[in-house]
Amino acid sequence: MAYDLAIVLPTFNESANVAPMIDRLARALAGVRYEVIFVDDDSPDGTADLVRRLERDHPNLRVIHRIGRRGLASATIEGILAAAAPVVAVMDADLQHDESILPEMLRRINGDNLDLVVGSRNIQGGSMGQFAAWRVKLSQLGRRLSLIGAEHQLSDPMSGFFMVRVDSFERFAHRLSAIGFKILLDIVLSAGPELRIGEVPYRFRLREHGESKLDMMVGLEYFELLVDKHLGSLVNLRFILFALVGAFGVGLHLLILSALLRVGNIGFAKAQTLTTFMVMLLNFVLNNTVTYRDRRLRGWRFLRGLVTFCLACGLGVVANVAIANDVFHRGLPWWLAALIGLMFSAVWNFAVTSMTTWRQDRRSSEQRARRRIEAAAKLAAPHGGGEGLPAKSA
Ligand code: GDD
Ligand code: MN
Image (tube, rainbow, N blue to C red; front, side):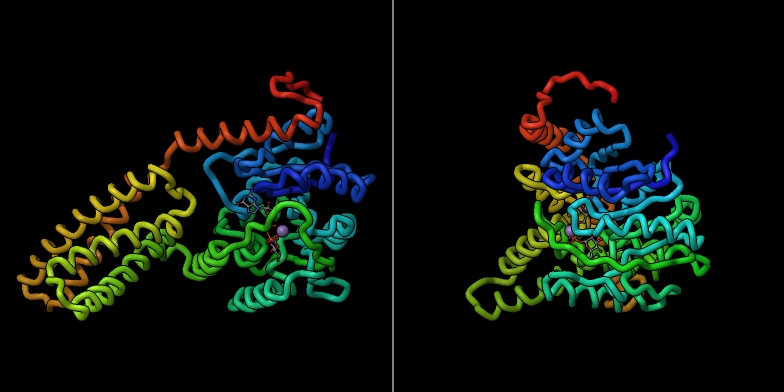
């Protein structure tokens, strides 16, 4: 069967929303030939396993189950590129987006010959609904930032609800940054001026089941997206974060050291050693939670990581001093020599810790998978299919 429309639903821990979502789509899209593609990032609650079970009764259902990856934007891109239909709608899987406007969006994209139709909360007929006041403010702030230097002025660039033609999407897919939550903004900033855009209003609903994944990190990723879009290939974002953490550490080191020395009855060598370890620990924690949040080390891996981090940075210090000393004696001013030494150790520390401390670890993802499968087995019990039921094709 040829599909007219694909619905791409990125999910992370949405098991309670999967079945209601599928029902609502069926009601909204009566008469439309559509497929549904879930893109799940190995949710610990077993969302992907649940969808796989439902696939047996719904031949138009599919799940792309990604392991070792996280990210709403990148999940969405993979879903769109997997579609068989010529037009794809992207929506949240948590029932917050109003599926009843899908037929109107489809009519617009086909009838008005558009590349992109955006579900907007900020035009006549649309609304933020009962969205918390601080989230509305945040959305407005994000919107204002997004408009700087943009070729298209959307009323709701923060929306995660839109429809796009796959052949148009393929034209700019390789230019996407695929960072964070704001895939629509990524598309609009990547596509170029020839993109034909329409808007259809909708009212944003409140989430009933599960939790929002919006947090500080998602906010940080929003800035990363803007930096990447505007400065592009000039910078490596992970290195920038690593260097920022390092620079913060240097400043903090001076502060703590001066405080320790002022309090007195501690010699310089002791104070310097103590401060070095404290700052190294803090830098490790910051890099682990921010720079490498996607490979975050926990439990005993955290301790092992701390050891390799300290060893790598220790060697970095030795090399830093040797190089700075060398260029200093070649006649460079002291501050330039110091900066060159620091730059070298930043690059060294980043390179070495990315290959040791935060290298990709397959074993821990296997352990997560085992927990996930157990969670899914429990979830699936009320649906009649126990673990070990042979998979019948629909
Ligand atoms: N695969 C995958 N990977 N899916 C994810 C991830 C991820 O890392 N993070 C979130 N999702 C899925 C959620 O499961 C949900 O279906 C959808 O993306 C939106 O995530 P929420 O956590 O519900 O986000 P929100 O409600 O705070 O933000 C939404 O509203 C914004 C409008 O204010 C998102 O749709 C944004 O894109 C939208 O702009
Ligand atoms: Mn949501």
